[in-house]
Length: 296
Length: 129
Image (tube, rainbow over all chains, first blue to last red; front, top):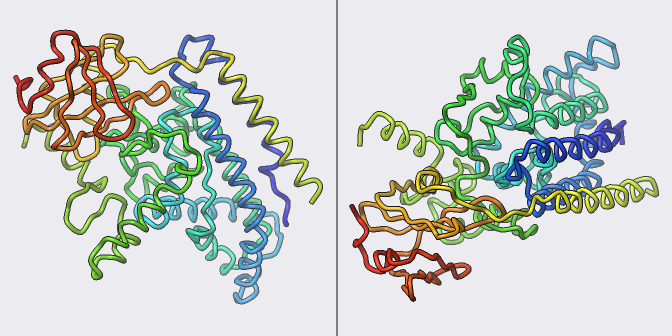
């Protein structure tokens, strides 16, 4: 296995969570954390580490194989590192966008969104089933372009580390130049919101410019109080249910749907139904928009 | 392998300490609604859309019930220190017992202390307007 920067960052994550706990308590904001929710989020984090240890070798082996088939080999040149980091973040943007727009990927990624809290422990709420969802394919183009698999893995690790600190309400806004280019707590709060106007926005990992470029950016508006979680809130602190609920939902829907609609419950967006009995995020936003404009 | 197991063991200890610290610092308060307006804001986020025309809060703010123009009912149930919106099935009608509303149609039974207003929620459309 290549060098894993995330393993070295874990003690820092723990220290920062303790710092945030003390900070919000000192400010008298007891609703910002909840001990069972924190326990579930951290259990997700540990489980994802174990899942990564089990499947990581195979994921890297596939990258190596693709790298070997490609016509280019960039090697370990110094300039390849920043280029790989930026392109890896672009790959992350598309993975993340698909993770919200294709139910198969969402079944895995929903784990990260199922807390009604938004604090640093939420950042560690990582999926156990990313390998099953084949999320790793989004990094294959980098290997095909000639980047070293070890370099891709390290860049992906630093990408994940960057995203830790943006999961907080303790920071309002960063300097304007930073907000313009980088993903920040403000931008990412929007991403975790269930408010209709914010659904499926701000997919960025490190650079918010991808959202601005591809038309998925929405700034945070302090007039609209953010509520976090998922459209149909879990309402359970059962860890296994929290991990697998969307996979169970897919299995149930595929089983019950007419034959010609079965596959749609896998590849279409979350909330899609063949009889229109549910709502996708686009439908929710449209309903909200009609209500805002008084057009019923 | 040994270092990975050590790392896993260390992570487990850290998780237990963090959860314990969260509990000790008092992040274990019950959810509480301060006003019908706050409840209405949460209710409007319910899946499928729900525009409340009547909202009633439990006396201690531990839950709420709402009705829309179609006569559908929805409850806000506590989950940790937040609330979760749950629409009630069409055939579900709460029972009033001395000013306390009992709802046991699905999930965990819920009680709301509403006082004399509890009677307004036992029929299909009595609380509209």
